[in-house]
Image (cartoon, rainbow over all chains, first blue to last red; front, side, top):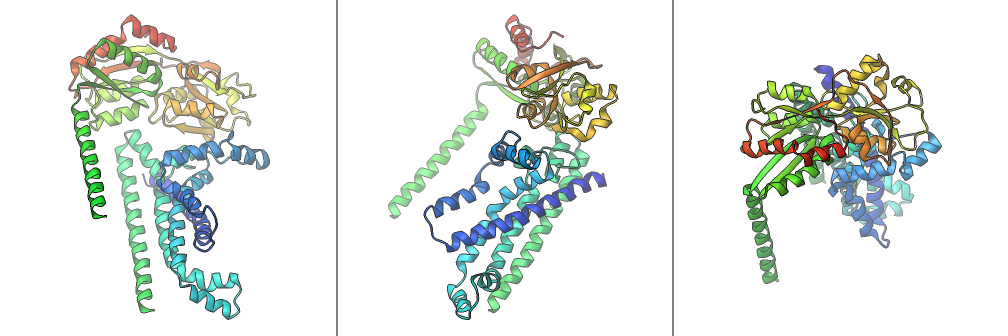
Amino acid sequence: MLSQAAIPLLLSLKVASWATALALVAGVGFGYLLARVRFAGREVLDAALTLPMVMPPTVLGYYLLVLLGRRGALGHWLQENFGVSLIFTWQGAVIAAAAVAFPLVYKAARAAFEDIDANLEKAGRSLGFSEFKVFMRITLPLAWHGILAGAMLAFARAMGEFGATLMVAGSLPGRTQTLSIAIYEAVQAGDDGLANGLVLVASVICILVLVVSGRVLQSGYRRAVRY
Amino acid sequence: MAEVRATLLRGVCSGMAALLIGFNLGAAHGAELVVSAAASLTNAFRDIGRGFEAANPGSTIVFNFAASDVLLAQIAKGAPADVFASADQEAMDKAVVQGVIAQGTRRDFVRNKLVLIAPADSSLALTALSSLSADAVKRIAMGNPASVPVGRYTREALDKAGLWTRLEPKYVYAQSVRQALDYVARGEVEAGFVYATDAAIMKDKVKVAGEIATTTPILYPIAVVKDSTRQALAQSFLQYLATAASQATLARYGFGKP
């Protein structure tokens, strides 16, 4: 029972951590780009980037399966050139989870960048900071709180990812069977004992994420008030 | 502006009210028979369902297709199914033990065969079960033995051939036989185990490498659910399966007689 819960739990944590890291890098990049650079089709791109959040996970899963599958455009290329196949692997699960979690970071990051007083960045430039230094020393620290809040939501969303993951990574015990999928399988097989144990674990994790993110946000709020 | 908003609000409210009314009507509508059937029966049962509706004016069949154990889990938790058709005796035995089947209604109605399939464009020579040990076969799709009958038949066959444990790292468990079929058709796996009737509906995408003998005969049982509120209609569906028209449909899809 313990190992039956521990293996999917550890896998879920691994997948969600990687997915959050990917979503964080891409979300901050795109968030900054769309907050600062004006170009034609900006709002269309914004809609496209937000799409994974509102699209049914099965639709996203299908897109990923068609794209990354051995016969898909990208999947075929990866297979031919690197001998890599993402379908039915935990890395595939990471991509599925990162895709659904990305908009949460991106939206938060864009809003956080847009909220920053441009005068602070100008002050940095006037003191001779390079653009990179302005970003690292002024912009990012100021936006960090909003981004962190987005990242926590993204982590929670990635932990709970089910639909797209099941389609892309399948349900391979010990390899791609994450906590949500293990619960689904236990219910499918009528194994109520295991299902009860697993949903308890999942519920505790969700509460933990909420409590921790609440603490982080609150301390950030206090700091903001002090300023 | 305020007027526009009021009109909009009224529109939204009446729209929602209409939806709610529609919802209610749907629940109370006519004689609706819910048939929970094994995924492998999907195409044949849809055809038979149309015939049944034509033969029983005023009645509607709602099909719920999934792996047999999944259907059983739903019924055991009180899902309003009227008829249960399973792809193996084990799922139906469990249903009987759990007391969800109406006594004396169970009977076997079709036979099927287990086949080993490969993507249509596969260059692998899969001649026997032992050829699955080859390195070129990286993944093998099959139903999850814990909840999908075709997975149990497959496990039994591989167990008997002494290959189950050796091949285990290659298994990709599917949620139903149709998912295993889809994995093979998409070329995501090199081989898969499905029923002959499933392979037949995707002839253009998968090829049958061979029929696999099973110790347990692949015999599908069907029964009326004990808590069904439409016992008579459920019984007439079971009887309709025995008609010449239904038998012809089942045969057309490749199902054998019990």
